Image 1 (cartoon, rainbow, N blue to C red):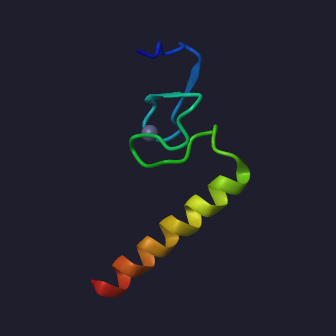
Image 2 (image 1 turned 180 degrees about the vertical axis):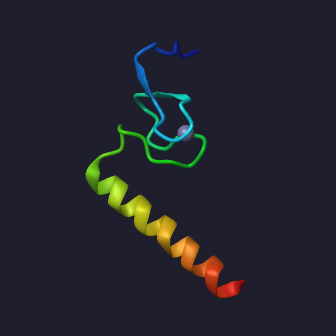
Length: 57
Ligand SMILES: [Zn+2]
């Protein structure tokens, strides 16, 4: 059983505590622990998903 370290930060969107190994908050927002490259890829994926929803609606 892993112990959760108390080091972490708050999500900018929902103010939940995010752990150092948590790259995406439970609310779906990228955390500061995501690298720039990962964040770009994540945002592109989010944008594509949004576009698909917009087209099918
Ligand atoms: Zn959040």
